[in-house]
Each structure stands twice: as C-alpha cells, then as structure tokens.
Image: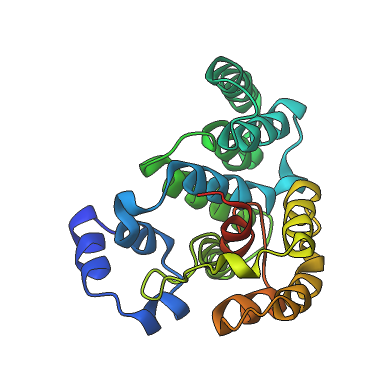
Amino acid sequence: QSLPPRHLRFIAHHMTEPAWLENSDVASMIQLLGKKAAKRKRRLFACACVRRIWHLLDDCRSRRAVEVAEAFADGMVDKETAMRAQREAASASRLTPKDGWYAADAAAICHLQSIEDIATAARAADSASQAGVPRSTEREAQASLLRDIIGNPFRPVTLDPLWLSSTVHDLARTIYDERVFEHLPILADALMDAGCDSDEIIQHCQGAGPHVRGCWVVDLLTGRR
C-alpha cells in the first residue's frame, strides 16, 4: 500500500546516503530526487520497470509503447508519435483480461513523467506479484534500477575529459546503442587505461548491475543527462 504524500516527503527529507544505497522504497527515493532527476531519466526508469515484466505483455501495442517511450526519451521520435503509441497501448490495456491489466497499464503510461513513473513502477510490481514474484522482491529490483540510472545523489561524480579516450567513447556509445551492458567491465578496463581514478565509476562498471538505458556512468561518458 502506498504511503500518503506527506509521509513520503518526511521519509525523503530524512533520507541519508546509506539509506539511499540500501532503500527499496522507490516512491520515497523519487520524492528525494524531486526535479533534480531529468525527465529523460525518469522516463527511462519507468521503461526499465516495464521491461522487467516484458514477458507479461501479450499485446504488441504494449511493447511498442515502451520502445517508443525510450526513443522519445532520447529525442529519436516526436511527441505526436509517442502520444499515438500511448493511445494504442491504452486501447490494448482496456481490452486486456484482468490478470494482465497491471502490466498492460504500466506499458501504457511509461512514457510520461513526474508522478507517473511511480505509478508505472507500482503497476509493474503488482503485475510481477500476480505472476508469482513477491512484491518486495520486485520493489528491491526497481530500487536497484533507479540507483543504476541516478547514481548516488549524495556523492555526485565529476568527469575528467582526459578519461574520454576514443576507445572509452566508442565503447560507451556501443553499450548504450546496442544494450550490451555486459561489456561494462571492458569499459572499466578502458577507463583505467585512460587514467580514470574514480572508484565510483570503476566499481559501478564492474558491479553485477542491473544496468539499463540511462545508466549514470554510460550517460556521463556519452554526454547524456
């Protein structure tokens, strides 16, 4: 059950760095970020939540809505195209049987931002729960996704341009464009070869993940916000 907004604001206001790193309450984490989280990152977070339940999306219009939302986040399609995909996904949602509605509805709203990214995450968690995944497990996974996309807001990392060798730049672009996040450890090696001494960046690349579109390290290296 969702907490009232005033409770979320209280939790977010008193959140510490250790709490951010261990928290599984996505709503309070987003409340902490406020407008500091760019619309693009919020939208990609919502899409990442829905991609966790991709196998539960039976209608191709639902899947297309997610793909278009990701493209819209990166400026690859216009707003009219995104809204059309959303309307088609909403139609699919209305025709979806009750046991699949949460997943279909999450796909239909994932291209939005502000409070809708929380709603998308909640619906995705509910859908996973109906499919047999404990809701607490799904919320923990969503919190990990958010940390991958946002990083640590208590300890922002500054990029040294000297680390952007041609190898680093090309690897980062390929990882993002082709979704080959399993190559992040290779990127870590390239960064160290280029003189990168940021433990936060190297450890994130070498970590188990999850890593998705919007990963803060890849965004940092490719100039995305």
